[in-house]
Length: 220
Picture 1: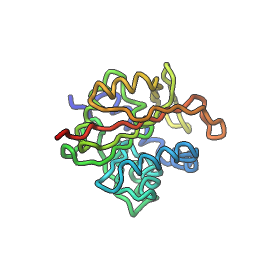
Picture 2: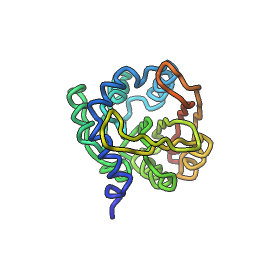
Picture 3: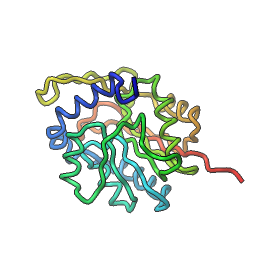
Picture 4: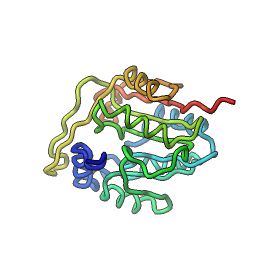
């Protein structure tokens, strides 16, 4: 069985294929709505610069991909869900979107200047995170940056029948210190580990974590 055949991958794809249109409409004004999120994204863009492409992995309807592009980065989106990609291509026809799994990226080693995983690791089981982060490191050039966002917590959130659709999925919540440790064990150096309070106006019920990590540059 390949990574793309794993049960959680199949479940995640089916979940988002079912809800894509409703999800895009419901969260249209939420992605990148918080000023602190935009500030960190801006800092990430400055760190990456314009030296190479950036991949928005788990891009969904492409809202974050478009924001990254607005910061001057050369970015493309990748997602499991064909339905989500259909929305992204319709809403952002000037950007490139591809279907695939971030667990098994069809990209050459060291081909990216930046990787963005904006709440896209939430369906990955904890014991698969080292492999996932290893894949992120593989496709980043030495000195490349990773931006990772997720909800803070210890217990997963089970979502059943969203928008009335007969699907369900688990959303993993993590502790930033544990994720930082896994990143460092996977060959990254963590440059930023931040947590902001939940913003009820955005429908948040838990604190939100953002990490920026770097694949170390080659030493002379």
